[in-house]
Amino acid sequence: MVLRSSTLPENYEALLFSYACGALDAAQELIVAAHLCYSPRARKIVEYYEKIGGCLMDCDCGTVPMRDGAMDHVLARLDSCTGKDPQACARDCAFPEKIDLPAILRDQINTSIAQGKMRTVWRSLLPGLQTLDLAIGDNTSKARFYKLAPAMRTPAHGHAGTEITLVLHGSYHDESGQYHCGDLAVADERMDHRQIACAQQGCVCLTVTTAPVKLSGWMRLLTPFYS
Amino acid sequence: MRPAVQKQSAPDFSALIVNVARHRDRQSFITLFEYFAPRIKSFLIKGGVAEEMADELAQETMLSVWQKADHFDPARSAASTWIYTIARNKRIDAFRKTGRVEITPPDYVIENQPADDETSNPAQALMHAQEGQGLAQALAALPPEQADLIRRAFFEEKSHAQIAQETKIPLGTIKSRIRLGLERLAQQEGVQNLWS
Image 1 (cartoon, chains in turn purple, green):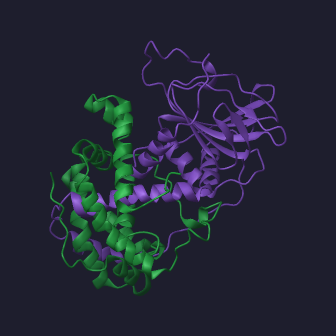
Image 2 (cartoon, chains in turn blue, green; image 1 turned 135 degrees about the horizontal axis):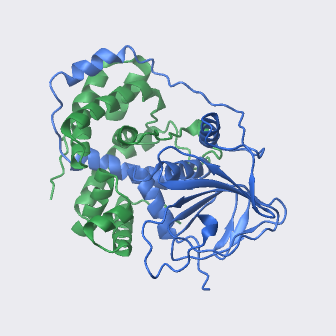
Image 3 (cartoon, helix red, strand yellow; image 1 turned 90 degrees about the vertical axis):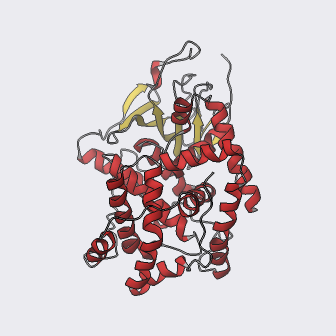
C-alpha cells in the first residue's frame, strides 16, 4: 500500500473556498466553521475569499430592479426588528467527553440529542477506538466523533470521497504530519493513511465524510471501516 | 465579458451601516437598500434563483443588515463583503432544511493575535473601501477561464466537484484554475503570506 500525504494544501484551500462560496453541505459547513473558531489564519483566508464574493456581487453582476413596493415592504418591517440576536448559548453539553468544544458544536450536539437523533454514550469499534455519530439535518455527508485511546492506531485506510478531520482534544499524527487541537486535515480518495493518537492524551476528533458518489475501478481502497 | 459597474462617487457604505447600528438611521438604510438590493437580486438570479425568490431573499438580506448592523466591524471587512455573506447565508437557509451555522467573534476559541486585530483602525477601514475597486480591476484582468470558474463558484454555490461534473472539465484542472486565479488576485491586491 502506498501511503501519501493526507492533507494537500490545495484540498484545504479548496474546502475553505467552497465554504466562502456557500457550496458545502451542512455537515461539512459545521466542521469548517468549528475549525474557524480555532484558527485565526483560516479566518483570514475565508475573509479574503468572501471579499472576492462581495466584490463580484458589488461590481461584477449588474443590477436587477427590485419589485414595486419592495423597499416599503422592508421599511414597514424594520420596527418589528429588535436589532439583537437571541443568544442562546448553552454551556452545558451532554457530549460524553468532558472537553471544551466550540459553541456551535455544542449547540449542534444538544440539538441532535434533544431530537433523539444522537446517543450520549460512545460505541466501541475496536479496543481503544470508539465512535459516536452526530446527526445533522438533510446532509449528504456523515459526521462522526472518534475517540482514540493513547497511542492507539487506526487501521490503515483509504477513502471513497473526502474525509475531513478536526482535532477536538489531544492530537494524532499520520504520514502527513502531526495534528493538534483545532487543526483540520483533509484526505481524499487518492490518499491512504493510518492515524496514531498521541501517547499522553489520546485523541478526540470529529470527521465528516462524503458518501461515495460513484465507484470507479481505480477507486480500489474502500474499507467498510469508515463508512 | 461583463463591464465592471462602479459608481464614480459611491457613498461610504461602511459609515452608513455604522449609522444604522448606532442611530437606527432609516435614511442610511434606504441608501444601502437602493444600492445593494438590486445587486443582491442580480447576483442570486445569475446563480439560478427564480426572480420572485431572488427579490424576497434580497429583502430578507436587507432586513438582516438592519438587524445585525451592530455586528458589522468596518475595520474588519468591507460593506460589500459583509452583505455578501448575509445574502449567501439567506440563500443557503432558503434551500436547505437545516440553517447555516453562523459564527461570530464570541465563538472563537482562539482569538485573533494582536497583530491581526485591526479593530477600530480607520486607516484599515479606508483600505477596505479602496480595495474593492482594485479587486474588481484584478478580476477583470484574470484569464477568462480562471475568472469564469471563480464567478461560477460564487454565483451558483458550486463545489469544485459539481463544476467538474457540469463542465466536463477534469476536477484537477478546475482546482488548479481556481487556485491560480485566487493566487493571482491575491498577488495583484498585494495580499501576501495568506496561505503560508
